[in-house]
Length: 180
Ligand SMILES: *[C@@H]1O[C@H](CO)[C@@H](O)[C@H](O)[C@H]1NC(C)=O
Ligand SMILES: *[C@@H]1O[C@H](CO)[C@@H](O)[C@H](O)[C@H]1NC(C)=O
Ligand SMILES: *[C@@H]1O[C@H](CO)[C@@H](O)[C@H](O)[C@H]1NC(C)=O
Image 1 (tube, rainbow, N blue to C red):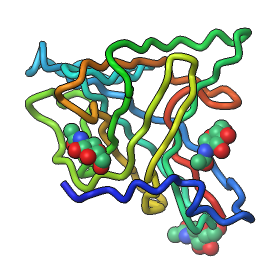
Image 2 (cartoon, rainbow, N blue to C red):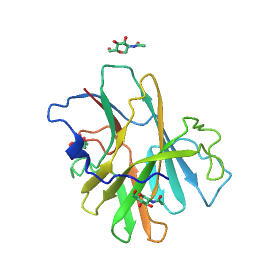
Image 3 (spheres, rainbow, N blue to C red):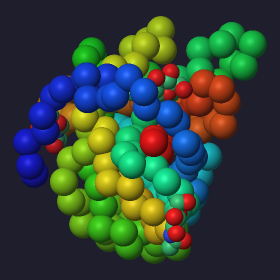
Image 4 (cartoon, rainbow, N blue to C red):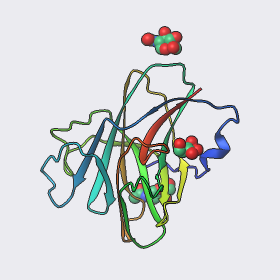
C-alpha cells in the first residue's frame, strides 16, 4: 500500500474553491468477516470495525469540476439526532482506499470483493462528533463510478464506528465533493 502524505486537506485547497456538486453514496455495502461468504447487499448505515469493512460507491456526474475530494462530516445538531456509534480505544481512525470499480451489491463479501488500490485518505472521529481528515483528494471520475473501502487504520487497536448516512446540511457521513 502506498504511503499517504498526511497533510491536512485544508492546506491543499485554494481559497477560491467552489463546491459545484456533492454526491452521497449510491451503494453502502458491508463486508463482514463473521459471514465471510454471504453478500449483505446495500445499506443506509456505514460501519467500520475489525470484522466489518464498508464499500462505498458514488455515481459521479459530469460537470466543470477541476478537483474532487472525499469528505466526511457528522451532523451533531441535537434536533436532527443523526445516529452514530463509536467504541474502542482512541485515536478512533479509519483509512479509505480506492477500489477497482467493480463493486457488485449482489456478490461482494469479505472473501470476494474488488481489489484495493491506493489509499486516498484517513479519517479520525471523536465521541463529541469532531472530525479530522487527511488526504481525501481523489480523481474526478466524471460520468462513471468512484468506489472506495473504509477499514480500521490499526488492526491492533480496538475500534468500531457506525453512522446512518444522511443527506443533511451539514451531511452525516461520507460524500464525494466536486470543486471548481
Ligand atoms: C462534461 O461537462 C462539461 C462542462 O459542463 C462539458 O463541457 C463537456 O462537454 C461534458 N462532457 C460530456 C462528455 O458530456
Ligand atoms: C492507515 O493509514 C496509515 C497512514 O497512511 C498507515 O500508516 C496505516 O498503516 C494504514 N493502516 C492500514 C491497516 O493499512
Ligand atoms: C466537509 O463538509 C463540511 C460540511 O459541509 C464542510 O464544513 C467542510 O468544510 C468540508 N471539508 C472539506 C475539507 O472540504
